[in-house]
Each structure stands twice: as C-alpha cells, then as structure tokens.
Image 1 (cartoon, chains in turn red, brown):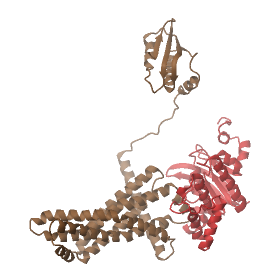
Image 2 (cartoon, chains in turn cyan, orange):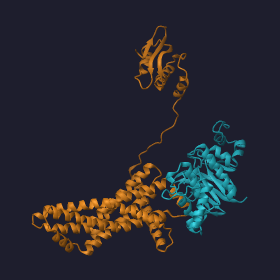
Image 3 (cartoon, helix red, strand yellow):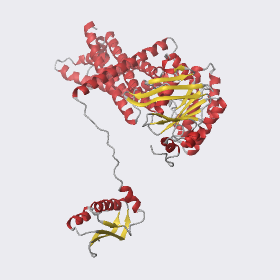
Image 4 (spheres, helix red, strand yellow):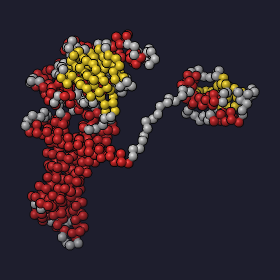
Length: 253
Length: 373
C-alpha cells in the first residue's frame, strides 16, 4: 500500500522548548493509524503539524509525496481540503445550526446547488446518527452528539484522510464505543485513511492497525506498529506499562 | 471528658487513651502534647494506644497519630499497634510516605536589561502581529471588493443589528445626558454675560463635531468591542477558528471582515443619532429649565453647526468604528485558550480601543487645526 502521509525526521518545538524530535513514520492508505502516548507528550502538537496548524521546527510532512510545509498557501489549502478533522470538543461553529455547519464546507468547495447541499448535509448527519437534528444549534446538544456532529462536518467533503483528536475524551463508555464503530465504518465505507490521536486503550486496540508511541522523556517515538503486536512483542518497558495500564511492568529501564 | 489521657501505669510505657470524637470537625488535642512527654521523660520505651472509648475518627486521628509515630521512630520508641481501628494502618502508611524529591519550578528574577530587552522584543512582536492582522484585513477586503471572498450576508445583517439597532437605547440615554450636561455647564458661564442663547452653539458644535462620536465610540468599545473579543476568544478556545483554518477558510475573511465592515457602517449612523439626541437634550434643558425661546434655540443651532462640523464628526466615527472592531477581533483571535485568556482578551480589547480612540481624537483634532476645518 502506498503511503498517504509520510513524516520524515520531524521536529516540533515551542520557541526554544523542544517537544519532539526525529519522528519518522508513514501512514498507508486505509490505515487506522494511532498516535499514542501519555498526557503532555506532544501528541496534539504532532497532530497540529499534520493538519497544517503549526509549522514544525524541522523535517517534512509529505502528503502524496509533496512536502506540505514547503507549498504555497493555495497549495496548502488544496491539500487541507483533502482531509477532515474532528476536534476534541467537536469545534462546531456555534453561530450556525448543525445543518449549516455541515453545509458550509460544501457551499465553499462543491458545485452542488443549495437544495442538493441541504440533502448531502442531511445524509452526513444521518451517517453519524443525527438525522433530524439539522436545525439544532451546537449548544442544544450533549457532548457526545456535538462530537458526532463534528464528525459529520469532517466527512462533509468525503475526505481521503480523517484526523481524530482524542475522540473518546469526555464521552461515556457507550458513546465512546459508538464513535469507535463509526471510525471503522468510515474506513470501510468511504475508504478513508484515518489518524487517531488518543490514549484510550480500549479505542487503541479496538480500531488501530498501525501506530506510533511517543514518549515525553525521550522526546521522540519509541515504538511503532500494530498496537496488538506492540502489546505482545514490545520489549520497551514504557510501551508495556502504557498498553497494560501499568499492570505489567516492563524490564527495568 | 478529656479526649486524650496519658497513662503511665506500666513501667517504661506510655499508653494513650483516646476517647470521644476524633473527627476534624471537632476540637482535637495537639500531637505536641504527647511528643513533649518524650522529651521530658526519657524512660519511655513503648507506646500503646487504647481507642476503646473513641466514638468516631477520620483524617483528624490519622494526622495526629502519624505525627506521634514519626516522633517515636525518631526516638526509637516501640509502637504497639494492636487495637488501632481497622483501615487506619493503610492510611498511616500513605501518610508516612516521604515527600517526593521534586523541586517546584524555579522563579528566577531576570536581570534588569534582560527584562527591558524582553519587553522591547515583545512590543516589536505585538506590533508586527498588529501589522500582519491589518494586512490580512486589507487583503480580505480586497478579495471582498473583487467578489471573491466568502461572505454570508445573513451573518453580516445579524452583526449589523447587534452593533447598531440593539445599541440605540444605550446611545440615546448617554447622548441626551451629555447634551444636558453641556447645556448646564455652558449656562453657568454664559449667564455671567447674559449670553445664554449661545448654549445652543456650544451644545450643537460640541456634540456634532466630537462629543457625539467620542461618546458613541466609548460606549461601543465597551459593548461591541468587548463582545467581539469574547466571541472570537471563545471560538478560539473551542478550536472553532482552527476548524476554519483546516477547511481552508481564512478566519479573518469569515469572522473579522464582516465585523469590521458592520461597525464601520454602523458607527456613523449611531453618531448622527447621538448628535441629534445630544442636541435634543440641550434643547429640552435650555427651553424648559433655562427659559430660552425654542425657535431661537433652533435657529441658533442651525446657524452655528456648519456642515464641516458634521463631516469632522463622521470622520471620527468611521475611524472609531474601525479601531473598535479591529481591537476586539485581534484580541479575540489571539486569545489564549483558557477562561482567564478570554477575560484578558476582553479587557485588553476595551482598554486598547478606548485608548486608541482618545489618541485618534487628538490626532484628528490636530489635523483639523492644521488644515483649518
């Protein structure tokens, strides 16, 4: 499978403070790729660099072989249009209804007429289990529904890649599970490539088929591969401790 | 009954008899009472505890015992732990854990020159970000004028209503009162010369030329500027602005431009309205309280207030509108992602808008003086 996203020697930092360095991995088409690691290890910063919100200090992020951060703004926007992002809190635009939230990307970048746009928006909301909520404002929904609506917006343009930032954060277990199922469904039905930033073990094992593990002390990735293989085969105590909720301590460091 | 009694009946042994309520909500004896015994009697080798008379306990007891036991360890006194309430051992073990060797982040005071330098760098950075922001707004307007910008008329009309029509009540009240104050202040001086009719000139010129615009500007900074900053600040906190960016939509085009445009359109209208209300206030006081003939007042106002005054007032208002909207939106978009950040953004939007309004007024007044308008 060809690599959809390729990260080469990526270094991330805030001013002088180095968050991560020497990241090398690639996400293949159809992967559900997990970025995991403890709190504050730089997962979200890495995500920001992948989705074009934070320029990395060093290295390259290649989309289809082109370095995102070396393109001009118009090219960058074009690449960004090929992916959807589900933000942690859903990040729905609060002044618009759900229908309008999902419709806005379509108004901007599709050639559909308003009637068709409304219809597609309705469909996307139905895909995430929110049929009939088009006229609700985000503030009228629960956290889980907001996240699903955010997902409906993220998939509005049928993106090739979908990024999830902590999808299960703040959700009750059944809602989190439902979102996991949606992730797999999206990959299978839309053929999308999926990148999930999370530290939720249940999700990691349920959906992931490839991953990187970031460690805040080493300031780099310390493992990569299928999470289940990592659980079974990894020798790294940090990885084992993380993947077993600290119940199995690895060999002393 | 005493909560703590010391029993020395067995040689070389101190028995503590605890009774009554040992919860933190009640008054508890200090551990020092026991440890003091260790100091004055060096024959104690054993410490026993009798809790049979105790009716209840919580962390109050744990902290008392933990301190006494620590002292015992230090003095190598054996503690007989039998008879302690069930479950307390675990708590005591947790309480006895040594503090982790972590150092709080050191707060070092930077040397004077380094602080000055940092401040200078920060000022440079913030003026560069202001210039960037103005450039982005100009670029967005450029695209808008070529019909390329993504512009939602519905949103725009909503903003117009919020910063125009909804502000009328407040603007009316304040402008009428400013007119009233001007009339009264003028009357006191002009009465000395028997020239009270010139109140009409004072109120008219002052309101139309500058006061109408300045008062409206200050009101709108507090009302609309603050609301822009809070609104965009919360959008920033909720990652809504990031969501625009990753969609390839320029947030300046989508969020800032309509707000700037709305305020630049509404401010002159509000100012005209404020001018009128101010003159009305002056009129009511002059004719009703100070006994000036209404027709004469109106005639005087018409003669005194020239069109150039009106233009000067409107120029003020357009500039103020832009200042308020830019300050509000800039602070909102650059807002830190926390509740405190939004508060700070709002405050600094209002403060910088009002400061800039006063500075702009001074500059415009000076220019008018030079070009003799």
